[in-house]
Length: 328
Image (tube, rainbow, N blue to C red; front, side, top):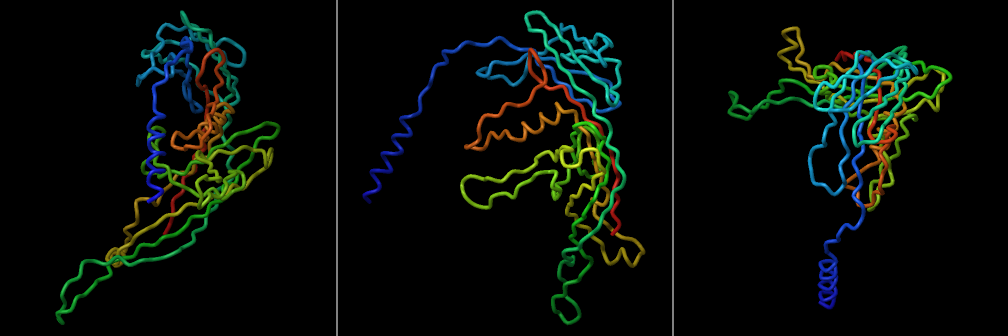
């Protein structure tokens, strides 16, 4: 009971610490924000908005509709981009491997901004090898019924199998340059560029740099590669066998076997997507993954921007899609 007054005192102390603090600093002028993330062989476009003061409680950003946006390709002015509405500026330029893209944007009452990136080449994939390891099988049992002996009868009507698919994706890294990659595994039935059903996979390979998560304690000292990114630091200019794995399950029913067919799960077809990234997009993903609004011990993180005179990100990614159909 002696501890009760002490606990009450601590609670009152925390309650007394809550107070409003007036902001006496200078309200900064808005900056031009340029955002563009484009895939290879797509027409280049950007979104231009204004930054917002951090103490403003708004859900949207003001778009810039009167900007002059010049697009330079390999040091030569390609065109002045067209405003297509709502701060979106489009061009007739189709993104091509290896091109150096530079954006110069100007608007009244805003600083001139520039951004530059080099388009990443498509990954040179050699082959994809897979093996399956079965972990367990469980029967599918229908509801009990009463047989001739008036005893409960449980009928096995099928089986569900759980297994791991081990993958080795071999590809060639271009020599003489720093290259950036990202691996995505997706369900093929629901795969498109706008709504992707990502599959969680185990990043077994050393290039992912994952650390084992801390299983106890207040502070988690482990680290995970949230976006599946990596560089060519360990295999620059070489052919590399990238290893990873993911878990699947499949189901078949006994009646289907008797009829000569299987009733398989919906997850039998996958897409392996090895992306090459521009350096700007890679650094953006890396810094974004280090930001956590839910971690009470997290330190402030500066999200990468390659926009000079403003903020935002101009990046590129190139797909190399490998279909994977599993045979059970």
